[in-house]
Image 1 (tube, one colour):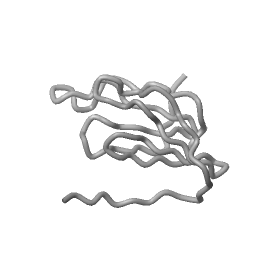
Image 2 (cartoon, rainbow, N blue to C red):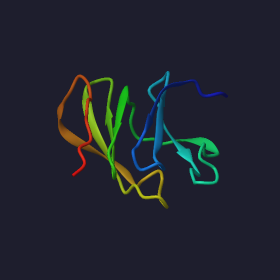
Image 3 (spheres, rainbow, N blue to C red):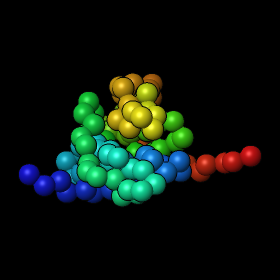
Length: 102
């Protein structure tokens, strides 16, 4: 079975690459290192459906087709999938963002 990636999201820290397929499944890219910058494969991150994502330095935020907001906790260079999704109170129609550096 092949994956049909619909959208790809890249974090500013260089090791977080996430995607959504045409069925709202969420994936992350495995083994992104300086000597393998494209990684090796896509891995399914189960637990939610998402129609868009946003990536910060430490979290992946997901917006479900129903407008629910989720945050992925436990993400590190060694734990590229993270530990769990946590529902955030409230609903939204879309994500937007701008990273500000001091």
